[in-house]
Image (cartoon, rainbow, N blue to C red; front, side, top):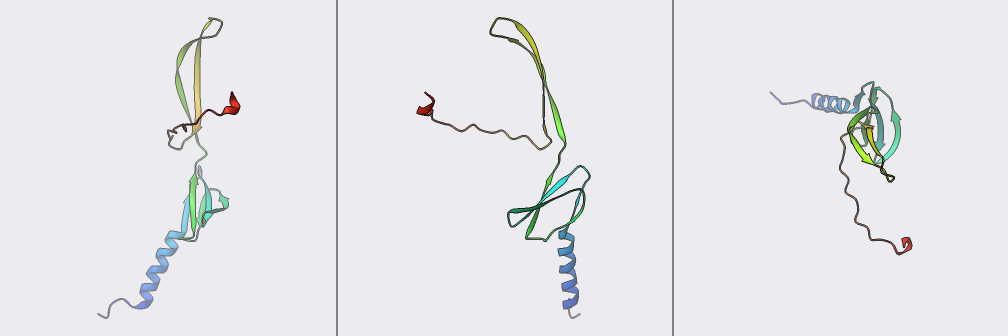
Length: 110
């Protein structure tokens, strides 16, 4: 056996590049395409071709999630007690905890 011929080697490399270039977005997803860090366009659902190594596809889902907050009793300034019900709606991405920055009070505020 003489080993792998150059034609077969290049065919395998070509098939790997083509497989990496095809992206499929589901009907509930949208995509933003970045080329070397700059946004070049937005795409809808379906099959999308990108340049591997140069383009990057960021999948975005527009679905929203509703989180229900348990009812709470609150007393207003004029001593009236009320019951508050609330619902938070947001994107279906994982929620991140954000740390508030430590800021110094500005002298212009006082």
